[in-house]
Image 1 (cartoon, helix red, strand yellow):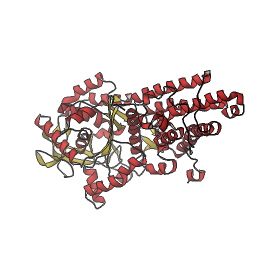
Image 2 (image 1 turned 30 degrees about the vertical axis):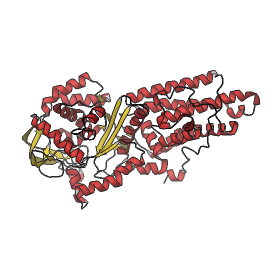
Image 3 (image 1 turned 135 degrees about the horizontal axis):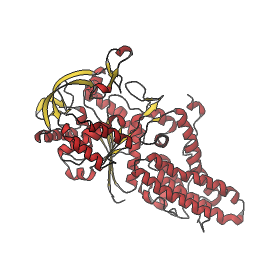
Image 4 (image 1 turned 135 degrees about the vertical axis):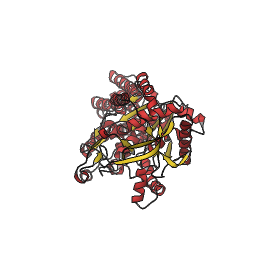
Length: 528
């Protein structure tokens, strides 16, 4: 498939200070579905993810586990964070670690450029610091502690006491970029999305920006400041640069030009870093700002955001071991409007698995393949002249494909899935009305039975292509059962934006038996 327009998408790089929970998995899956869609649509796609391994939090966590920070990071990355990608079937193109030489060299080159051009200068700072956030906090961002922290100021996000730090640091002159950032938000309204996130960022920047402390001298776990070995680069200033150090900054200009700018997918709690600090850094360096920063919502459990520090996280494997990776991917992108907070419950997951995946899509696929096998010897028949109902299915497929692609373009995968799912619902309704099992009993209706089975098979062909970014395992099985591989080639090679074009699966294509795409899950397992 020839390369089309560029589309680079990134997830945040996660702290490997502990094991991942389903909130991390949600971000990875969302980025992967968007990347798979663009990749199969022919766009020159690149998906980047990785881990953020420097900073005081990593150092303290490693020390608490009687390890050095590099040893601790290596262990967690190999045992937890890389396996997460396999667990959720993530097809990333690169995985960057901030301890890799390519990143550390790029960070040193970037901060040196800003220092040489006068955007970094020395200064003194005193303020409250949250190690969990790796961020200086204003008093308005703190709350009074309760319980064992009564009488102390605690971080509103992590609910742990902040520390009062006083250091001689280097500062990025971010205050110079207030007007330029506001102009960016005005000229490009879609730069920060959704609209609620944009409004928050604009309101914050309108208050005026202060210069940003970008070095630390109280510990040494980080990238050394090139001109002053007593300091390491502030972990966020270091981490944000992964988006360009992974694609060629300071060494491979051709790749950087090909892959940049990117779409950044972030949790809303790190929005300001990506929508304020990061574009200001790029402006100072004379580089293009990102294509877009999209802040998705939080996953809530019992009304509260999941947190490793509060021990409220749920391991992704707890879901995939029971329901499979396809169900994980489908559920979180179908059930939660992208950009909003969403509540997770086992009951809702189980209900959607049974009603939408097993009984809806899975049963549709199974019975169409089975009827072709039973009534036509496992060979897709010719459609003949279409009836009004047949034409109605064709229009549903055509419209769904167009609407889904438009939804992906506006970063609304939940709307894309809803559009595609209309095909599932319409095909199930079509079979109920046409009753192919009854037609098979009447020889004079042979031509009509052929048309119904051919229409249903072609609808499944379109579903396999359109749903493959979301349900890669199930769609691969369906593609094989339809015999589409031999007739049309690999599923991954099907041009996604043409998936709604009718009559692609040839008459005479040999099908094969299909095992249940979403097997029944015993009730005792669900209630365990």
